[in-house]
Structures are given as C-alpha cells and as structure tokens.
Image (cartoon, rainbow, N blue to C red; front, top):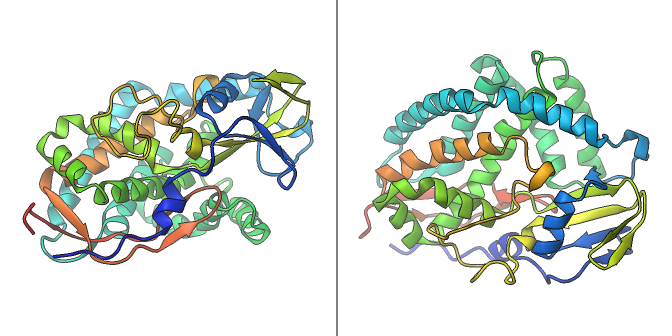
Length: 347
C-alpha cells in the first residue's frame, strides 16, 4: 500500500538554510552562528552565557558560578543509579504499551504512544502523582508553545501566566527537575521523539535495520538526535568583549546559535542530510557541548532508548497513512501527530 505524499515542511524542518561564517543580523540585532565549528566553540566559550530571546540586563543573566552550581545539584540527582531505576520502570511501561499498539489498524505514534510514556516519566522525575500530572500537562502547554516560537509575544504572555500557575506546585530540588523539568519531559521530549519517529518513517530501511539489530538503539538515538532538529536555535549573551573566530563580539550583545544548521554542516558530517542509524562518532550539538551541555542529556538519552526500542523490536515496519501537519516555529518544529499502520516488511 502506498502512503501519503511527503510533506514539503520536512525540508524546512530538518534541512538547514545556508551555513556560513559568523554574521551580524540587523533584523535580529544579534550575531548568528551556523557552522558546526562556530557553534561548538560558542558552547565552550565562558564569555557567552545562556540567555533568552529578549535583551535582559546583564545583571539578570545567570553567572557562570550560578550555572555550574545548578548543574552540580542536578547531576547529583540524575545519577547513573537513579537513571537505571527510572529506565527500568519506563522500559516496562513502554513494553506494555507497545504490546497494545494495533497491527494493521492506524495508530497515532505521538498521541497514543510517546506522549503517555513521556508524561509517565515526567511524573516519576518530578515526584508528582499520575493524576496530577495529567492535569498539569494542560496547564504547561503554553510554556512549550512559547519555546517552540519564541518570537510570538502572545505566546510569551500565555507562557508567563502558565509559569505562574506551575511555580510552587512541585517539591524541593534543582530547578531543572521541578516545573521546568516537567514541561521538558511532558511536552518537549514528545516533540523530539515525534521528529525522530518521522525520520525513521521516512527511512524504512533504517527502521528495519533497528528491528533486526535492536542493540544499535543507543547509537541510533545519537543519529536521531542529530537529525531531530530540537532545538533549532539557542540564544547566548556576551558578558564581556570576546574575539570569536575572526569577529569581535562586544559585552551585552546577543548571539543566535543555529543548532539545526550546525548538525547538518557538511564540513563535519559526511552526507549530513542522510539518516544512518549506524553512523559512527556522532558528535552532534543537539544537547549542547562542554560546560553548556544539556544537564539532562543522560535522562533524555535514557528516555529515548527506553521508549523507542520496544516498539522497534515488535514491528519490522511502519507506514504513514496520513499527511503530517507540523506545529511549532523558529525554536523547534514537530509533527502534531503521526498516524501510522504497523506491519511486516511486505505490507
């Protein structure tokens, strides 16, 4: 059976625009970095600290010491032992749900599989009850929507209101594992997985390869993270003047890191637009790098493997049966749903 035509938004979502040297974009009032080498250097530069879209006073940008303190506290909680405990529980839930996914009948990979498992993980990590997690998931949606399109002022306003509702509803612990962690796991992680599933659905041979050799799941997740394009961009602020790869960035200036483009830089990745689940030495930047790598990187990797592997093991093939509609914006984009039909390789 022939599936629907490829959605043209796939090109816009997962293929970078022109990659070039650092340049100052007058419309954004920011430096734009798109080459792999430049974005990697920015992650390692102590003078470029994480920032939001708007030009807040430098006094409101977290210092390097404050960032490192928060990282240490979070890493202590996200210990390898704790990740193994959560991973075992999540894998069991994923295997149980994978067995219930219908054969030959359409099913939504996002709404029926990934999102429920991500919400289960969000409840585990933040220590809230499953019933409460369901209710708070709806409250948190505007925060994720604003992150997906940070240039929309209406979404930003809704996000502030949602943050105010969520703040204080979670227990003590590092900030990344309270309300912000809940949003990341309940909303952002399903978006990442939706892009990963779509990449596999567009490359049936790669899905089949993982079905036949599921031991490559961890390696495949790295390639899928490279291709999944979440996030597309990140923001930085210069806390002092810095010479950066041939340009002078002054204190207070903003920097846009085009992570999507960097992960498709042909100077660093051979055949960058091709998904290869057995690709070696995948040093992507989807989760940052160096001192500014994502503090929850281990949690994300564990979750992706735990959620994806049971379904890939069960089904040798899956096919899109409805054209994909895309959500999000300049921050990140993702399929709203992925209606597929599972089957064998000959279906």
